[in-house]
Length: 98
Image (cartoon, one colour):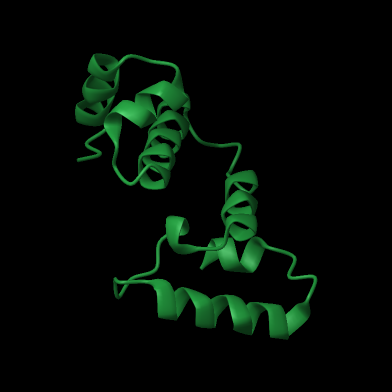
């Protein structure tokens, strides 16, 4: 909800309505997550993170985001993150991202 509210919606209500219709049609889950949003709204959500978060919280969120965008492909996620797969597995366990 925060991601949708934080985006400027230059097309006003019509753009928001179209985006929600697309999300509902394309989503297979009952709960809509950040990766289900159109890319412009996803990136808006990333920019609105609080400055009062720890580095560990931000790292966990970034890893979660990369994993979501790679469809859970750990090899590809590790490549994007610039770490090896073993380090990624360690961080997934450390942050309870299973």
